[in-house]
Length: 593
Image (cartoon, rainbow, N blue to C red; front, side, top):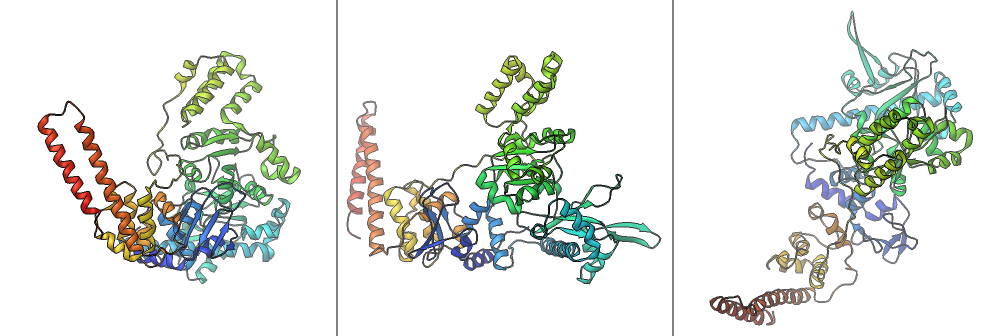
């Protein structure tokens, strides 16, 4: 995929009003010429989050978060710069133009849009078949028996695939999708017969669950059988396609991601109905993998939103296996893993329907760290009563312990295991493998998120930033001077502002795309609400002060060398001449402009 063009980025930022954008996420209240709200990036009671429509920026005076429309989407949605541009482009209905896209890239992008359109059409068709067709009566009864109301079915766009080999195909053909596109979507399978290859609907007589990406776009389906035949597959899922890779998608993430961030915790359910039941009961920090065990890509995706994962799989053998299989991926991403213990024969869906959300939350509150949970299970099973049992447990939990990223936490857990098993630390360490460097598809363990700090600027550089941001005349004058970064590292931000062309307070996309989160946060904190009189004169005086300060510091450094008795006489004469030259330069700088 090519680079997003500068034209697209500029169009997206110009079309995205920051008040409308942020107001679509949570309510804003007018406060004079700006708007304010409780900050979504830290816990607070008094609103300190301000949105400035004139500058098209936001800034929190509590935690320091700030920037423009793209920065808000990046921080709030936890996505990178290209993804933020694409989301705002989709919101504004602006087509994405790519500068270096080849003909092949363009073809792939066009194919992706067609596949998304097929899935959207199929989801609507399945849903209509559920709610309106006589054939969908059995599916409606099944969902009703599982506590799914018509409102919930509509919210999740649940559907019904009729017991027909080609009803969906005929509908899609009528929407001008080709058989080739339908096959690429995974909605059809093919079978060779006397007449050649014949395609037929993959999903028949099943309750349909649309699978969405974190944008909310339908990219695949999961169909649950309505037959009682034990030989029939309980679930049939879409095959992997250009849109859908099973191990990279988390079901429900498009709805729950904001709650995941707020709770900093994810409850991992085994199936779609478990997740829907929990979500509709008000327990919304939930997700479900496509299958049971987590993949590295899913764990990496989840790490963008939370630090703690509560595994809530069934208490049967398969559920325990899924828990163990999920550990390496989760722990290697620095996630803390706990286990929710469900009563035998229960899952979140049945528990919530029978005893209510409070009963399920009570079990969630009791969730124990995976290693403590394993020790407790071993005690209850009597496994620790024999040396062989202890050995088996150590072989089971020592390798995952090696994957715990936090060294202090790892040592604390090791101490607990050693104490409970009455074994020396060295015995457990010998069973621990070296932490795996999970390369996945992107290479290496994802580093833990660092808090974004503002850049530390001197008073003079802070003033230059503020004046340069507000005045094009000042920026033009600064271009003719030495780079501000030569005075201090923070001066690089002044240099970026100086090279940019813009009017008013709205920063151009060409500048925004070069700013780090720290630089954007620093700019958002500058106060440009009050016009500064004679900005160019103020800039010149500030620049003069920075130059004098720099020259004075050099002189002080040279003077300190003169008092060093080890410096040779000839070298002293050179130093004295350098000091004199610096004094002359200071005098020249102090003259009026």
